[in-house]
Length: 600
Image (cartoon, rainbow, N blue to C red; front, side):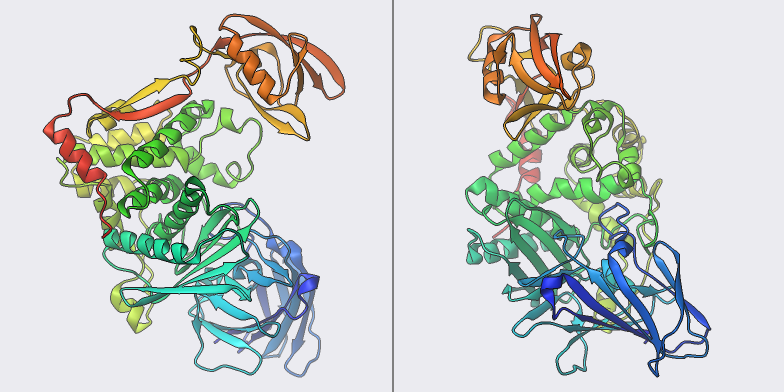
């Protein structure tokens, strides 16, 4: 044992966690402690050290020891002859997100990666975590309880700092729902209240677990924890090895489409139990917590997972086949509306996640593409390509199972013996392609060509070829086609209403707005001399035709401008995926295999 952690939250209204570290034995006269600068799974440097205060060090006699910071994340302690020291500090925690920490009088939620420092050079060693809460609070985490407990504290064991950093804690008076799959316990910790139905959440979550387990063959953990925060308007999740943190809208459990969003998030994050936490490219572990960990394969980690989230819901019988195809159509529409798809490849998007994905701005749709969105569509096309080329004998499921068998860093015997076997992830440059070829064949280099185009390149995706495999085709249209005798007109602007003001949020590259010289941030007040708001502008645009010139009156900062704009033909804004008129037997067979419901 090298570190015992103590975390206390007895003064929750201060939003300060009191943290102490007992470190022993120490052989060298100095030691370094570091706090991660980022949280694995959320690829942005967040500099958690900025929330640390009141740092102090004493020896085992209580005498103070000198220390100094040597960089933004690292404290150097001059311990001299001391062989055991105690480090104390406080962490301010008042940001409620899945990647940060939050403390108030209702609960204490924390990610150890932004609370607990690690001893540099010793992160591989086991540790204990002692948690002290206000009376009546419970503690829920994926870590195992330690054999020995102490009065007033709840103690957990971690095999190493990686396991500790990967185990969020929910402390408070939250509700805990429980179920089992294959005899393995699963807890759902619910903080907050809304219009949720506990029994429905429990039943549907169990179905998602069972359906995903059916794909991979087994559950690779001894216990799993879903931490769910119910807040106004929230949405997001962060995966962990045997737990997850999700934030959802507390009023988002009704109607059905809102509840589907909750289910999709649950399915997405649970799929990460395999893809990311056990299947990963080599750069994503072991982690360097002090700096960026670059990979070109985030599209595999997140895009493939995004492909499977709604597919799991379909297989589980939680959404219909028609609804599933609607979600695919929505994704295709969204990608095709992003000019940035022609500028940034999936590889580039993955690599630049650290500087672009979590810092969107008004030019983002013009210059970048989401590795979630495009990655999910490339996964779909790859799945259908594999099915077509192998006559349905193989699919993307087989590729994921192969990657799990070859690269997962745990096995059944490891789980039950307690031994943790670290295996390298797949090669960042070529490992995924080689896995596809191993599973589905490489006779003509077709998959390598496919991935070079879809992942390394910026050309348009060939949806028609993919959907032909399963006897489906895309039908594009315009929402206003039936109301007018002409194609809709388009101004090339994305708009938002802020405090009653209609503002330009994005000027799409190559569109009429850009040509006219309208800027993001401009406040639109009139069209052709008549006051507009969002609804009025939509109505007036429905009356106009492509090629006509209109005049936008707008404020740019405090200046009133009148800007002529020549309208263009609107891009298609509706898409349906429908069966071809006369599918072949092979197309029907392939479609049924792809869209099969497997839940009992």
